[in-house]
Length: 64
Image (cartoon, rainbow, N blue to C red; front, side, top):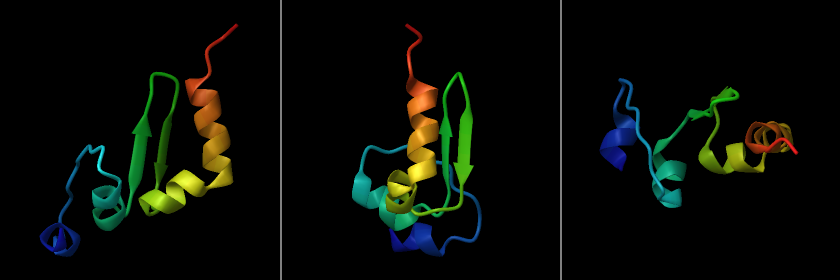
């Protein structure tokens, strides 16, 4: 993980590993057919941000 943290270029990755995402990521880009969220935050900060939670609820809502 340190090699990726210290790398000065761009690394695009997808993961289901919470610790890896928290350790390596400094920007989160979430893509759905409805919208894109792009924030320079750690994974934990991204997941706990209230405004992002509201956006995600709208992005993933299913019309009645």
